[in-house]
Image (cartoon, rainbow, N blue to C red; front, side, top):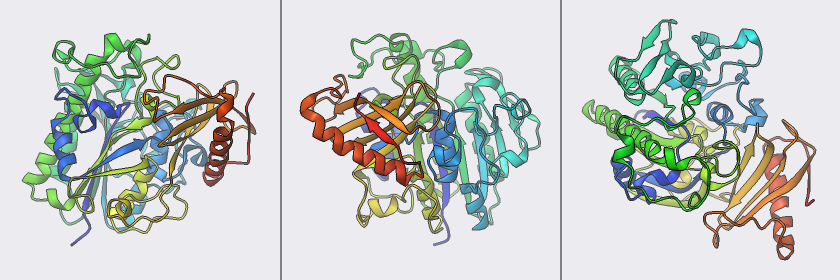
Length: 437
């Protein structure tokens, strides 16, 4: 078989429990549920950084955000980083990027591309291009634009929901692609991310009525935050994404390449709806760390469920492995294919995440425990962290009781602290100290 095509379907701020294949009772994601039945669902998938730009830096480079230097938003991807697009191009692939980029702008005035076209040298090697650096700055749910590779504007058709307008471009690539080469199509949506300047989630028209009969997730129940006014629209966004997935997979099947295309669906992080801190993410809780991850195509068929903990940091290695490219030693993640095949050796028993902007945080999440440390008053790396959260995920699945000060769990915290420091070192961080006070 020749090298398979790859479609990376990427949502923004989507919780795992919005999906039927993860337990959502409402018919929000029938296409993803069908894909999970045909392919592989990763039951316990987590982000490596619950912030938009840093998570995307990891996806492009295979390294944790701190190692790339993109530890918070508004830091551009270094131009000398070799991205997955560079790797795949070297191996004969046609790389295409559609949607939200969020890796070109920096704090310097001359590097502000939030509302301008991203110059080619700052696109990470993606040749076929229609994107905005910060899509929420150039569009709303029913208006706006992105930029083609030549710098001209792609205006969303009047009355067209943003998910559908972005998908229209992805469909155009599938028509225009070089049929002599395999391709990687990276489709990066902004939904269900809240619309910054409107300070709310914006589903398709009618979402409030259509999705009002939802069951409140356990971590949100009886809390404050803004989920009451937003969750129906949030589900509407996710349903629109599911329709887009159905369109793309349908186009692949119609073109006769469905069986020879790896499709990977996931998100950069979830949302806790302002119940854990002043905004939607940037915390160690499952509401923002846990994400959907479903794959189908070569290496992922059969309708299996993987129960081991996996991370977004594993996605770049997985894409390269799908193309037959040896995973670089610089990558912090591991390809998922051996895990699916039951051949993985010494798979980690925890996932590691870096947290930024609202704090400098680090955490490990095991099947049993979530353990998090932070330096609230400092940005960037630190020599000293203080314990902040400890949750018993088996007995407190919604993480409502913080046990970090429980004296009977001192040995548990010590062991988890050692694991966390080891994972920080493996992520190329300088040695640090964890304190209990």
